[in-house]
Image 1: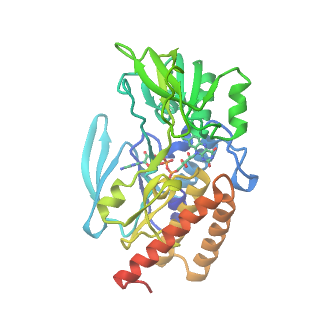
Image 2 (image 1 turned 90 degrees about the horizontal axis):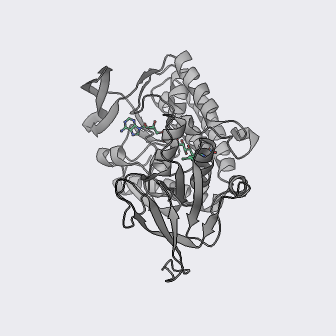
Length: 361
Ligand SMILES: Cc1cc2nc3c(=O)[nH]c(=O)nc-3n(C[C@H](O)[C@H](O)[C@H](O)COP(=O)(O)OP(=O)(O)OC[C@H]3O[C@@H](n4cnc5c(N)ncnc54)[C@H](O)[C@@H]3O)c2cc1C
C-alpha cells in the first residue's frame, strides 16, 4: 500500500491485488502499540497505521482487488490473477502492467515433531489471524513454541482473548524477544521454559497434551527432563521466511541470508529486482518490520513514478534519499548490524549479477 500511495500521489494509475478480504496484510492483526522510535510510529497500533494507509489509497483512487490471488508472473510482466468477481465466483484475468511491485510478505516456519499434524497445532500467525481478524479463539489451553516477539505478542493477545497460556517453550538459554513483551506475560505468572523444546504432541481428534524436555546447548534433548502439559492448542512461532514464489517464478535472482529469514530476491537501491520492471518490498525481500516494509514500499513507488516519467529525477532522488535515511535509523535496533549487513549484501549481489550480465549502467 505504501508503494501504491507513493506512485499514485505522483499520478501513476495503480492496481493492488490482495488474496485477503482486506488490504493491509499483517497490520490488521497488530492490535498492539508498535515498538521503536516515535519518528517511526512507535506507540501507534498496527491496525491504526493500516487504516491510515487504506484511507490514503482510497483518497488517491488506488484500485484494490480483494480475495484475489496473483498466481503467476509470465513474460513481459503479465500477471495471472484469480480474481473474485462475486459471491463464490472467481475469474482468471491476465493483467498487463508497465511495472510490478511484489510485496507478498512472509510465511511461517514449521517445527516438525511427532503429532505436529494434529488439529490444534498451528502457526502463531494463524492463531493471531483467528483471534484478531476472525474473532475466533483457536483453543483454551495454549502452549507456544518460540519466545521471539511474535511468540510473546501472540501469547499475550491469546490471553487477552480468553485463552490460558500454559507456557512458552524456547530452546535458547534466554528469552529471544523484547523484555517489554516478555514481562507482560511473566507478570501474569505464565512460565517461559528457556532451554526447552517440544518433543511430541498427543491427542485423538485434536491435540490434548504436549511433551517438552530440556535441551543441551547443541539442542539434543536431555533424557529424564520430560514434562507433559495438558493443552488443546500449540502455537508455533519459529520464525518467518520471505514468500518468494512469484519473484522466483518471474526469474528474479535470490540470495540466502539467515538474518532475513532465508532466500530473498536481490534488488538495487530503487528496490528493482534483476528482472527489469519488477520491484520488491517488505518481508518478501527479507523479514523485518512493518516500518521497514513501508519505507521499502516508498522506495519502489517513487522509483516507478520516476521511471514512468511522473516524477522528475531530482524530486525522486530527494524522496529516495530521505527513505534510505529512515531505513538506516530503523535498522539500528535489534540485530541491526546483521540486518544492515544482509541488506547491503543484497545490493552488492544485485550489482555483481547485473555486471556479469553486462547490464549495469
Ligand atoms: C505478531 C507480530 C507482531 C509484529 N509487531 C510489529 C511491530 O510492533 N512493529 C513493526 O514494525 N512490525 C511488526 N511486525 C511485523 C510486520 O507485521 C511485518 O513486517 C509487515 O506486516 C510486513 O509487511 P509486508 O507488506 O511486507 O507483508 P504483509 O503484511 O504480510 O502483507 C503481505 C500481503 O500480501 C498478500 N499476498 C501474499 N501473496 C499474495 C498473492 N500471491 N496474491 C495476492 N496477494 C498476496 C497477503 O494477503 C498480504 O495481505 C509484527 C509481526 C507479527 C507477526
